[in-house]
Every structure is written in C-alpha cells, then in structure tokens.
Amino acid sequence: MMRFTDRVAIVTGAASGIGRAVAVDLAREGAIVVVADIDTVGAEKVAAEIRAGGHATARGVDVTDAESARALAAATIAEHGRIDILVSNAGWDRAQPFLDTDPAFWDKVIAINYRGHLAVTHAVLPSMIERGWGRIVTVASDAGRVGSTGEVVYSGAKGAVIAFTKGLAREVARYGVNVNCVAPGLTDTPLLAGISEGAEKLMAAIVRSIPLGRVGRPEEVARAILFFASPDADYITGQTLSVNGGLTMP
Image (tube, rainbow, N blue to C red; front, side, top):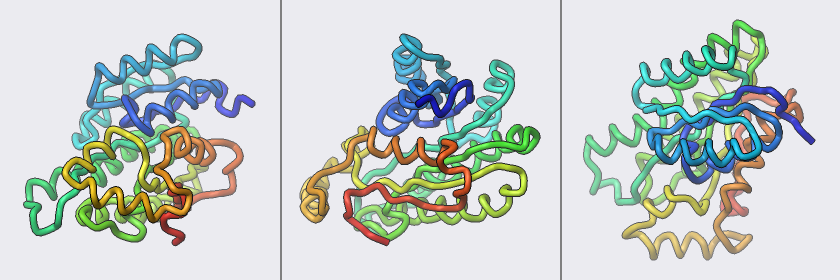
C-alpha cells in the first residue's frame, strides 16, 4: 500500500538512525522526501540511496538556527511547491550525572532537543496552514515521559517536546494540521552509541530490564512515525506513543 504517494515530506536528522529509516520508508511508500541533516555528506548518501527507486533531495540544516530552518522550508517549497509532512527528529545527548554537566552542555542539549523542534515547526507551519492540511510528527524520548538517570537535561528537553506537541496540536487542529509525538526507548542508533560511551554498565542494566529483552531497531520506531503521518491517523492528534519494548508503560 502506497500511503504517501506524491506527499512532500521533510525529515530532520535523516542522515542516520531513526531519521534515515523514516526517510527510506516514506520514499518506499511514494513520498517525495527531503533528507535534512547538519551532516550534509550523510544526508546526500541517504538521498542517493532513496533515488535508486524513489524521490529524494538532500538539504543541510542546523536545527538550532531558526534562519537555517526557514531556509530549509523555503527551499522545499521552491522545489516542490508545498510541505505536507514534517518529521522533526534531530537529537543529541551524552550520558553523565547532572552535577557533572555545565551551562554550555545544558544550552547544547536544549538547543538541539527542544529549540530545534520549535525552529523547524515554526518554519513549515505557514505553508501547511495556508493549504489547510499537514502532518507533524515530533520525535521525543521515553526519557521525557518518565525521566532517565544520567540524562537529566535531555529528559527535561524531551519532556518539553511532548508538552509542545500537545499545545501545538490544540492550536492548529482547526487548520487541518495534526501533530503527534513518538517517544522511542533505547534504539540501536549512532546517538545511542554516543550516549552509551562511558556508561556501558548503566545501559546494560537498562537493557536487562526491557521486557522484550533487547533494544529497538530504527525501522521499528519508523513504523510508528509513519503511522502518525499516514491517513490511518487522520483522527489522532496531540498524542504520544512510546516505542520501547515495554521498558516503561506510562
């Protein structure tokens, strides 16, 4: 089934991990995908992979820079005429005790994991509202629902994303724009590898507590994101779906 034929979708953080899986799956189901990432080399590799059987463009974006986000939206509209779907996925963290962090670390975590969602969403919404249709899926984390030892600042930022999603969903529903959130648990991505560095014992303990007995795969999270972006979720907005193997059941 081709659920996204001719839909124009922007996916941020799409050079690897969950974002890459989302971009590939959207294209497989007919979408025209803008593979957006600060890693422009990685984004182009993913776009080239998609172009072997689908439609994709690579675009550089720094989600912490509102002007960069506006440029991404403008370039997409100039090339494709509209933006139908935004998957706001870019994220970053490093695991460490809160008392070992400093304001520079706080600023970076908040800028990427919260303000980045604000910047990209703010940039694409006018086009969606003008056309009276849009689907926005933010990618938070289960850390934002229940907290996570060693990820205190990240937990706060991701909790803000969840609240932002709910508030925005209420505000833009009248314009035909649905906004939902996917909150992954531990997922086998480069981000997890970076977070786990130096915290291997903590991560191993978390994995042992997952009822399904393993970390998730990017494509498993991608399926939940595509559900929210698809016609199957037309009557769903303001919701957060955890994809975590049962680690938490909020």
